[in-house]
Length: 420
Length: 218
Ligand SMILES: [Zn+2]
Image 1 (cartoon, rainbow over the protein chains, first blue to last red):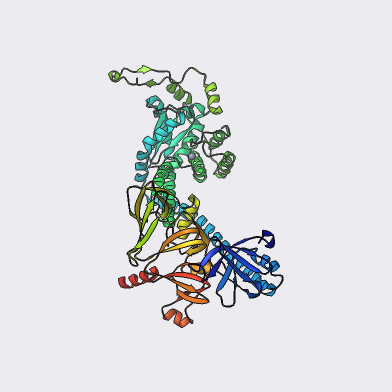
Image 2: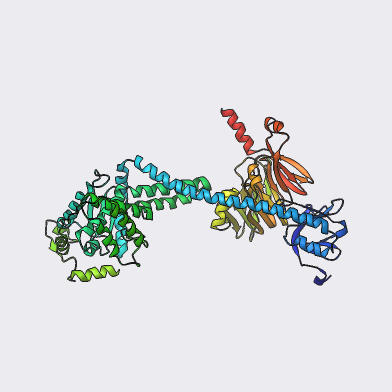
């Protein structure tokens, strides 16, 4: 026989017959003008003429077509969607009436099956979304019940790692902390004075200053804050500096780090329930927890910290509009991702709008300028006393003066920082 | 490759003798013992995403292990449940397995996940079923003994007893009798299967065991 004798090509299907070892085999099915031919992979052939063929529809999908002889000793079956149409043409109308019934049944079942499947998909999507918001809500609801000492311990635990990450931002091996009292104490006082207006006035903030050019500030859970030299160089007014510090302090008092950890735990638990043997995923999860503890960066958290910062400034009698000025003066795009105050904020316009809206809603009050000697702080940073490194013999107080920032004029450095 | 199912039916396990060039793929955790000459490669059970789908909906493990050897060696595969293990040779045919039943297969076998339908879910048989097709042997396990039945016309199986079936079998959920006998006769929902085709059943059901155990505790 030649291929020309067959109409509409081949279909994947199978055969039931007692003549096959095991009673069944997969087959490719062809049609000629007399009947169906099933060809097994071992070369064996089965023939069923159209006149002998009793058609049935069924199977697990509900759409499998069976062609069976009268004593049911031979069955050729196929699930291909085009099979019935080909059979209709090949059999020359002999099976027409029965085929129409079968097609109608097939379509009905196909619809019912699709309905179930799409219903399931929609259900899954709803469950996923619901589960995600459930986790967010659960983490938020749980945080107030956790004592603040947990935040402090967490901050202690991630402190070294945080310093390492700061160092990585600039490619340095180790962060240089500026421990000079002339630099640290004014900032500490600035933060302490603002802290009494925070939502958790009992929190003791500890300011650390690092000798890093990038304009940034990072708050660790529990109240430690790392202020970067680059931020002090960048701000135009002391109020702008305070606005950034207020935002960072708000991350602490709103306990965003703990919330992020709660969310990560929720996701891990959900995965465990869903997937079961998470095994290696737990290690991944632990990594996620540490990352979450260090830097909470969801838009939601940034937004909340902005608003809480504005409230604190307002309470302290400082014009919160400075927070807007700080945001707007930022160069857009190309902002290093790791920075908190600047990070994950392609939506700076959105943030500015939200802050502006809150500023307008706040009860009017008289604002006073912030009494802070920014130039003095910068001078102290430039002329600070740095303990001579790797010189233990000098520990009896022999310190040498280092000009920390080299002799560039202040405005030039600011432009450099902005260009980053 | 030579494979023998031993200690049937209660504590069945498969002893496989691998020669150079032979390969067998088994569920993660199925290996009970093996010669030191056998190499194990672990991979996702059908890609990362597919593996998660199969894990969540098909009751399979996230990973599968592939066993090979450069010389020869033996390997013993087992399943967590006390019960029989059945070996089927696929010849271009397809078989549907209930979630969790799959144990091992030869390389010519394709594993897929198929939608089983809401009715199957209501009947406690799972929304999805594992679809094995192609050419080669597959092994699947069950709780208790495994028995096969050629079904022509309709046949009734209690829910939780159906382990595997051919795609030519249609599955419907129904009540065992009238409402009274269904709920007070202890049969409740049953699976109505319609042939032609073959089904594989397990002589015990895990749901039955769970119910019995709960009954002893309270
Ligand atoms: Zn922030």
